Length: 117
Length: 116
Image (cartoon, rainbow over all chains, first blue to last red):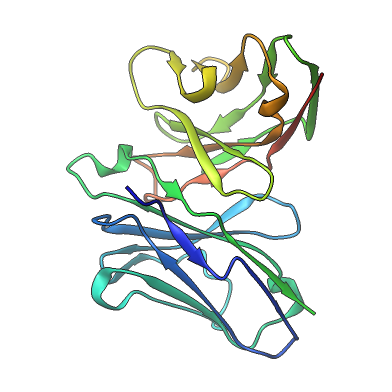
């Protein structure tokens, strides 16, 4: 079974530019999460999709960040315009949705390392 | 609010010696606790989790963790460390009854260096 995949693995952009990150969850997983680790600090939650619906977007830092999951499969996270403080590693995770889904393990992708210059 | 603390930024241990990575947590209810590991240039890999039941949880690669409710701790342990265990370890918590929903709250990570 393929794991969570993310593209690109690395991205270097200039301040003010736009970047779009993509996440493909494990097939059949309804739950999809975005997290990020900025400046070597804690990994912080950004948002949670259940299928195509945003369940929780309380961690989104501001309106420069837009996440979508059209069709409930892969997800994109767009940063527009990018700022220096957006540099970090963006992780995607997925989990199935069962009756006891709060106990489920979230499986993470390899991350996208974003550097804004 | 839920929180996690990993008090050590780095742990150094000689190969063959026991390895312990510390984690303490704070939640309003009974916690769900997780350990993940990040090897160099790789993503986060799940090691083990505590949901309920036996306080000693066994996971991948010979790791185990002990849930201690009175000390609000969930330390990760391995009886005999390998050089290949050198990596970044993250502890995470979820409060199933709290307002945080299904998201994980992570500690800052502990870098483990196992020397030959």
